[in-house]
Length: 327
Image (tube, rainbow, N blue to C red; front, side):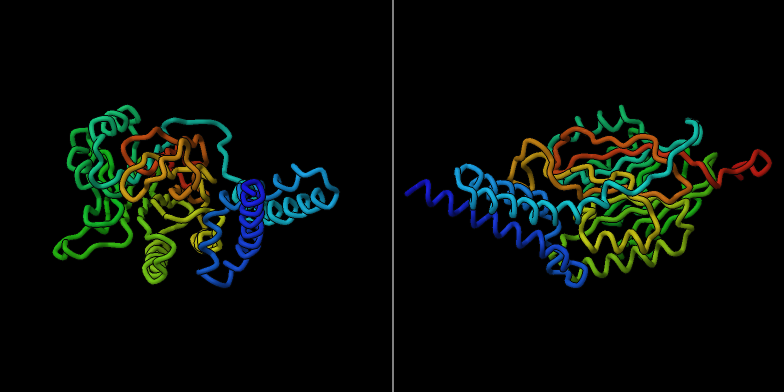
């Protein structure tokens, strides 16, 4: 009786997973259906479990049922996820450290209890740009590492080396109490002119909030050349969701991180899963086609429910000539 119950449970979960995997394609038309797309890795597990139930039975019909479940369920998931891995990133013909920039994206978690370890790791990384969310405590310590904050009243903050101060940013002035949905900073150095944008998105279930945040990012991004823009943040959405892919197409930026999983990390905050490995790629770094991808890495657990992700880029177009200098 117990085996029958377990078998029916697995079969039911598998059937539900297959239907959910097929329903993912409805995300093109419905933001509610698009929520299912974020759980595609879990749906794949459900499909495989259901197929396994049938494969354990020495029966021709059971084998056919298992194959049908695998073909339909895994086929739908693969069709939805394949574009995430198949697009072409820009590559440099030769590496030039003088034209490279290292960017770290991390939701540090407000109330992080491993602040010293996080600061030590950031010091060792020596990145040019830090994009961080939930940093009230950690942010106060970053000046000791030589970083200053741009738009400290934004959901995501851009930290830069003190010697490379931006010549423009949208940080609060007289209206410092008004938060910005997007942090923006313009830099000019040996790599030329470029823009860094930073965001911290709400969860996909908060439809009104995410709609406003999407509109705010598009409005800010269209003010600057897309080819030289770098965008990073905790998007709380996976790259195979229809909404994420629509926004990427509208921005004209290339996702450098492809599908590097960054959540969950440690069992803190609202994350109580305590997975031994990350499952969902919800932290992303993008760049325009003036930038080539040099290296993409994921960092260690550092007291947050998110892993950090690091990208090294190299400017391959729009580089100032010696006559132009960096002004």
